[in-house]
Image (cartoon, rainbow, N blue to C red; front, side, top):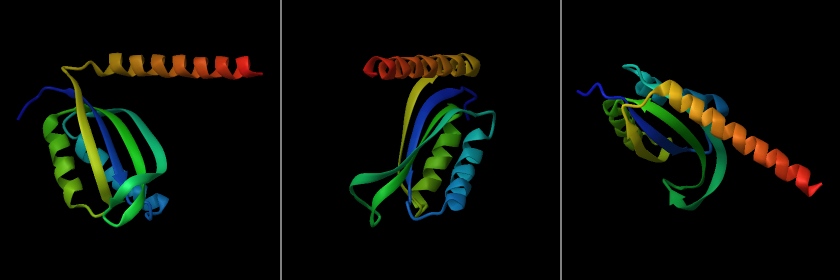
Amino acid sequence: MSDVLREYEFTFITNPHLNDQDTEKLLSKYEKILLEGGGQVIKKDNWGTKKLAFGMKGHYRGVYTHLDYVGKSENLAEAERLMRIDDDVLRYLSIRLGENVDVEVRKAEIAKAEAKAAAAKKEGALAQN
């Protein structure tokens, strides 16, 4: 067991036929696993329902969720293990971004990047008018 906190991008696709309550329950289940032992979700994005490039488990659409997560690799491995056998999870992808991450610094960096993107979008909208 390692005590090193690593940063990951974790994206997964769930069954589009789940209602909002069931989707939230599924997300909470996996978040609970990731957060054990001091992990933190820095940012959570629901990308919505999208058309899939090819069918997965009989579905041609899926609900995309993206997490920026800092925690232990063992927790991520357990979440992935459970997702492999969960019929409501169509696919998942985790990417390690860094080791020994300072959570507060990452939160500040993400907030700054979001503010910059929002300002650029606003400026672009004003330029079109």
